[in-house]
View (cartoon, rainbow, N blue to C red):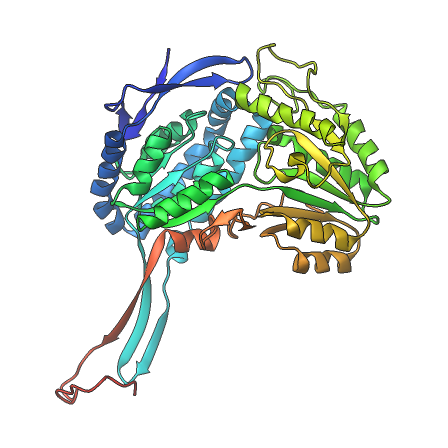
Length: 496
């Protein structure tokens, strides 16, 4: 059986550890390959390779770095179909969704090609007589990226192109559930001209994660995943002196006002609720319907759900399987909980007919009405194709419900009332907001990240925040002396 190796110092690397983990094809429910799980020593080897490569790469001119990033962009765009097929084989998402994931990752690569402009400092002349002050932005050194299973290409692309463009060396630890995409991109970056050791990929489980968090030569950690793990990453990394950006979980609400276009809202709820089998941190998982629209809206959503095809992502399907059998069973269990808690299961995704093999990790789109806000179906991040409906009596009730949530990642409002939309964007306590847009993921030259328990650390991902995260500022106060400088003066220097 094929084994996915680490990628260290520009080459495939087996490492000392003999531990491996299975990598499934979720659409057939069988192991497709194995992936190596790194030991602490293996992680140290990757960090050492990055540390050795860093000085020369940091001294490489911005023009040369920019050219390599651009070469990578061109290669990735030309071969995105190949990468999409890797994503579908290991994650299960349909090919069109995989291609969309790559397209959003490419936006960040394109943003990183502007690195000469992005790291420009500031300059003030003659702040005191004959004294100038200017600032520079310099790389951190070795930076770590720990990425989740749900976006094996896009999430790493949020981080490593920008980190590399800024002059850092990188160690990526992808999810062991779908590890091949990161190695494929590292190989492609080498083809684009990136020096060996600047980008390394080490696979593993908690052993590898902790080794990165505790390694003294790792300057920063970027993470995307569930809230409990994000909190652990943030606290552990910070305790070991690292700069940390840890993006956590979500429970995204979509508020539908009575004046909204219900057909548009129904389309959006289906697209945002069930795309990528609901395994998105920006998925809409709670539809908040302001009465009296709930019945009509639910009927429209159910009608659209009846036309969805679930099956193998390589075929002409709308939605693929979940990532593992265990995760599928966990998500399915919430449907049982909903019935016990008094909710109404309008569309049940269990036991549906699929266009794929029977052993795949299937669960169809599920719609649940009148979900109590005390139920775990409402409070938990389910991370699957389950859309809950909560009915409220007013706009104010809807906003209060959203603001009571422990999460603050994304939210949306559907309305034709500009005043209500403006009020919503000011009053809602959420980091990313859509107005008649169900998945408000910011474009690459803004930054991605939520509020409350959806983000640990002060810095969001990519965009201006990403540039600042992967660099540190140096301020220089400079004076060129002339023969009339005035001699020795031991007093405290004054601005003149």
